[in-house]
Length: 310
Image 1 (cartoon, rainbow, N blue to C red):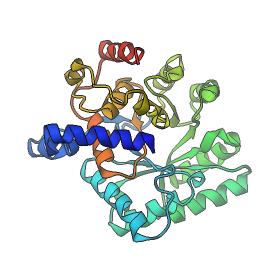
Image 2 (image 1 turned 135 degrees about the vertical axis):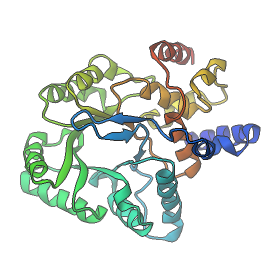
Image 3 (image 1 turned 45 degrees about the vertical axis):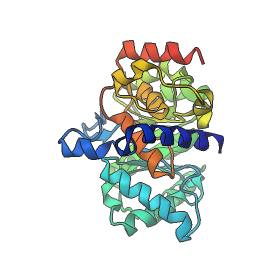
């Protein structure tokens, strides 16, 4: 709760100073016919994805009441209007798959998103049953991306997924984890060219992936999805009460969320980052990181030097 509150404070202050453009920076850009959101290619196909997507852990694990679901419906509508596309889920995330499926069908946007979900079990048949259940919950006959969650029984599931990819049941296959300790195993799999996507943790203060994993993904033509970009809110707590450095505006950075996300997007190996939110203001703030100038290596170095003083 501390993370959400402090971020809300920042947005309120900036909105008062800059007007509604900050909270919805997309409207003016759209009127000027400027690109809505930076796109990056999926190496294996050349298909492009917006660099900012949406995670669903915790936020989309809700019940069926209107009070719980209406804010999430608004998030999905605004995300699609803003040019966002990637929604990441998992059977591990409670009712998230079902809620995403229900709401995207309700607002008639189910086919407008790039659905990425996961298999999180052991055994071939259990994996098949769980994945088929995910298809049903999310309202899809074909899944855009199916990933092996936290490498659980990954060799078994990748065999199934390769068959499904050949059959056209899944478009892309991938692997995921959320801890530094798994990076070496992820890298080995990436170098074997067994997957189209790899998802892992990475942030401006948690940079183990910079040692070799990000480069391995780039060099082997594997798309990268980043989770834990805010370190579960720890980054916001670290900068609470602090002002953005003056030079942040050189990279069209208006908020701390954009500071953290633009550092990640600045690495050319990153295809998409998936901060989770159930708040429209936070969604638009996050998407703002994919607009305007992206830091080059010199800019990212300056960002690192600053964050190390916190």
